[in-house]
Amino acid sequence: MKKLFLLTALLILGLSVSAEGVTLTGEARFDWVDMTQIQRDSTIEYYHDILFGENSVNNYTKDEFKEEFKPFKKDQNYKEHYMLARDNVKETKDANICSFYYKGNILIIYALQYKNNPRNVFYYDPYGHLKYVDVISENYPNFPYNSKQYKAGGKLVSAIYFTSKDMQYMYEPDGKFKGLWYKDKMYDRHGKQTVVRTNW
Image 1 (cartoon, rainbow, N blue to C red):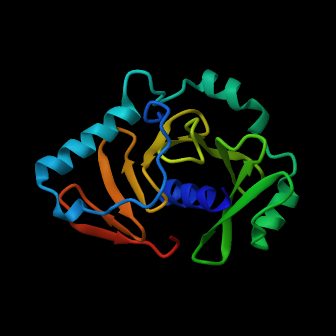
Image 2 (image 1 turned 45 degrees about the vertical axis):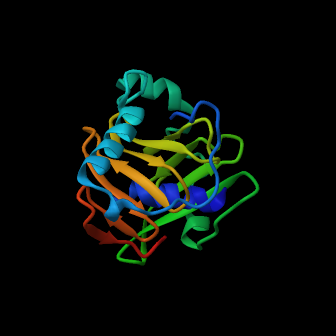
């Protein structure tokens, strides 16, 4: 669970539906670059429809967001959590912790995933003010699952469909396909590699 939390946090910040109750496990087979363009477009549309379908929450109103996440608006233990994040502590008895640095040495955001509430990840600035929230689908941590990140206030930042630990389809807030991550590389809708990450 800790590795999935870190992967989710890094994917979304770097910047849900199950398959009819069937949980898929195992490694994904990567054939994105070998597909025809019609096949890639069809796959992109398929996951887009899951993430942005009529029953999905793509934006909260400010009041809805405030009501749902009111207890998490301020991290009451921000001094302790900041120090733990700065010291690269990954876990306490109550939560998983993830640290985000600017230029490798200035901690700008830390994230908490409470063990009694693993389907949300809360991102805070150094003063404990809520900046983002991840809302993860019910079948997490089993694959497939999806995750959406919202700014504090309810506006969608990104949406990702995780088919496996190695493969994720990422979309922008307007539903535009951003790319397919496979391990440490991102590919565009035409099968061209566009980005490499060092944190996979």
